[in-house]
Image (cartoon, rainbow, N blue to C red; front, side, top):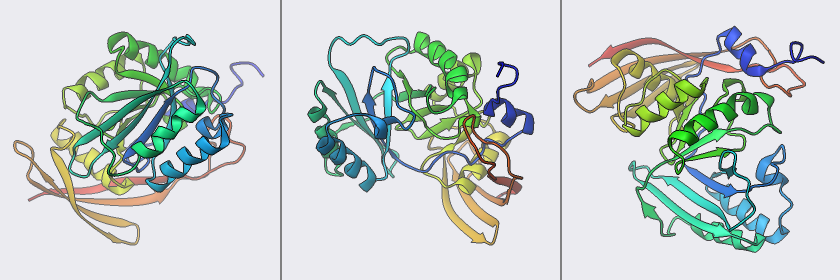
Length: 300
């Protein structure tokens, strides 16, 4: 098969005009494990680690619905020195908590299980971590589109940026996640990624390229993205979803804002499913996706 004949899910999604809004996976805890060797298609699950330690990490992550990602620096695979691990947590209050450690042996990773306990200590605040999906063994587009973005961001913020395994939404590559802020961006290239992260670090989140906030569910993510699109960029916590009412495939969502943003908004969101299509490069079956659309925004 020639390059021209190959199927690229991100190209197909752009041709279809697939909507970004409302596509960020739900969650508020991330486990990051630096692994400088090759990444299996299923990431952490596929690593050949000491079984007891691997089971401890998996059970602890599952208990708090944490997403486990393998990470590495762009272009750096030196085997020298210990590797890093981290547990990043986005609290309901909006506070951030991070705990970092290192590992040389598989058994060292058992510390992650303790760090995932709600009572575990961790540094409050600290700079966010910028994750770029570049998981070629999972999806071709994640590598083709993700690696140039990883390079551009790493050149600008070498201490903040890591390439990572699958974050979801291959068809929206290149995908960037800012954690523990819990913000997903998609459909990025090298230039737009630098702009999006630069604005994010200045606490100005734009609707363009925004997939959603991971502490919100898809209709709420879609509603908030529509508010940002209409009224302009805002800080990560300048708006809050305070009430959601659902009736069939319609949601009425109440959002409050901090001045100078609108202080109260009512957003109506409806959903439908797309016709079946191939949603990933390696997908063998056709799948339908849920789409959320804002039909009304009222102020007051």
